Image (spheres, rainbow, N blue to C red):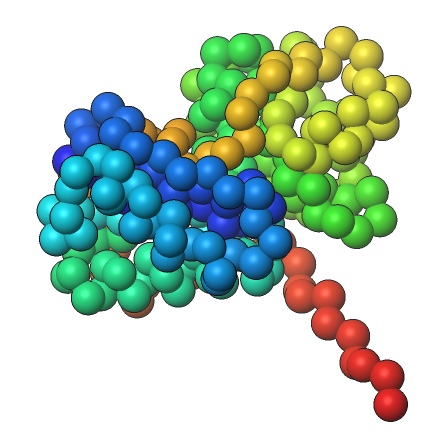
Length: 220
C-alpha cells in the first residue's frame, strides 16, 4: 500500500512515502515555519519516488503532542490532500512513533517530547514491543521514569534535554541513539494499519493536545 506520511510536530519536519513496508523517498527539513515548506517537501518525495499524487492510497500524520502550530499544519494539510483524493487517513501519536523507534531496547520504553515549559515533557510508557502502558501525560521528565519498574530505555527530544534530571532519578536508564525525523517510521507503521482498514475519513482526524495552548495577550 502506497502511504504518504507527514510529521510536523517539532522543528524536525519530515515527509515520507512508503509502499508495502519499503521506504521509497523521504524529505527532511529543519523547519522554522512548517506552512512554508511542507507542500514543497511533499512535492519532492512524490517526484523522487516517481509516483503521481493520484497513486497514493492512504495518508498518515502525527497528531501530537508537540508544537501546537506544527500539529495544526500537519493535520490540515493531510486532511486537505486526503479529502481531495478521497483516501483514508491515519493519525498516530508522536509518542507512539518515537516508542516504535526503540522497540526491543528494554522491557519498558519511555517516549518524551519536550513540552518547552518549566521542565515538563509530554511522555508515555510502553512495553518492549512499543505497546502503550497507560495514557500520555504532561509532567517533569524524572517523574515518569521514577514510576517505571525495571530497566527502561528513553527516547525523544525531551529525553535529550532532560537527560541529567532523568539520570539523577534513574542512573540505569538507557538512551538509545535514534533519528528524531519521524515520517519514515510513521509511514512504515501506518501501511499495515491502513491496509487492515484502520483508516478514518479526513474529517475524523483530531489533534492530541496534553495541555492548553500557551497564549498570552500582547502589549498595548
